[in-house]
Amino acid sequence: MAVFEISFFSDALGRIAPMTAVIPIERPHHYGGNGKPDREPFRSLYLLHGYSGTNTDWLRGSRIEQLAMVHNIAVFMPSGENGFYLDDPIRGANYAKLLSEDIIDFTRAAFPLSKRREDTTIGGFSMGGYGALRNGLYRSDVFGNIIAFSSAMMTDELSHMRKDVPNPIAPYSYYVHTFGPLDEFAGSDKDPKALAQAILTEGKLLPNTYIACGSEDIGIAQNRAYDRYLTEIGFKHIYMESPGEHNWTFWDAYIEKALIWLDGMK
Image (cartoon, rainbow, N blue to C red; front, side, top):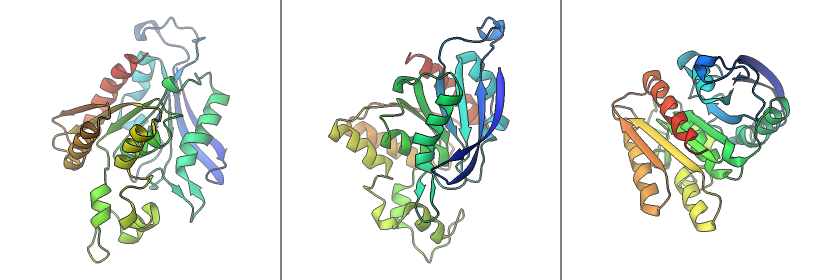
């Protein structure tokens, strides 16, 4: 078992980018291993943090180190800053490209990873849940599986946001900078609803999708609405809901459930 703090140059960002990695190279017997380095290519999980977070959040807030050993999966946790994992052409900070190109290429060159799409998963919570859905759907040719918890599904909110109404998270200018003209968000390639519909309409590769949200979560209404939408258009997915808030207690419990689900995809 090894935990790495990595700095690598990203063309997408034009600078050095940080990332944390958990690689279950030598799994002890009580984790289902034999104590020797694994010779088979690892499945990979690219796990995203939430707004105001960083690449070490999952390591500090959850049991991801132990779970990586139990499920024999390599986990990579990049920093998306507060960019919602979207490309930012104004600053030349292309977080979507970082996820789907730079990090994929770097990790596959540096570690013994499977290159198969079905062995490649993107996941996250809150802002990272949105990032996982958006980029997993947008680049379903790269990611075969999506895991999204308490996702910041903001399609309706963005479309109706007003400059003169204060927002408790960030100023109006932040949302315009991050998502572009807000009245153009719905139906765009940043809208997870539109991306799911496009996969069905255009016959693109369908990712296995696992969504979960706590019934007391601040975003429960948006997550329920997205589940209903996917069901209505015939987009196959798993939606899980149980008592829980927008916190690590819920995300830690559900990353274990999601990894068990992911094992069933093998």
